[in-house]
Image (cartoon, rainbow, N blue to C red):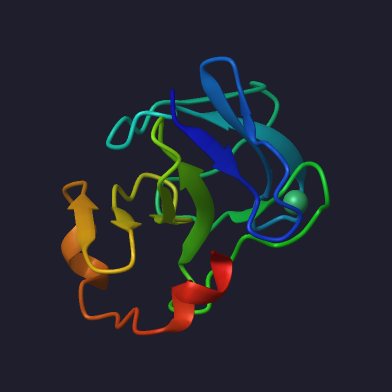
Length: 134
Ligand SMILES: [Zn+2]
């Protein structure tokens, strides 16, 4: 089982079979959004009263420390830390744009890209920026 952690408070975001986020839509309404811990599975769970449109940028926050998860490599990408079963750490970048499927797992040397929209952000340079998270 992969663990998912907030890059700011290092709190556990994974609960059972979901990763828990606080999100804000363009009307500044906040809600909890649950995503799958399986990379490449873009199904989400939310309360029906919380609405957003395809293409809308949601802001992702840690539900524990309220910290913004927005990345510093692109304003549309958020990030979480992932630890696999062997204790290896990754930075996982994912799109905050509703309906856009792009995920990047970075482990220091390699970027593993998932999702049919991932080409949108492949120009980004990770460089040394992610090293501060380890
Ligand atoms: Zn946090």
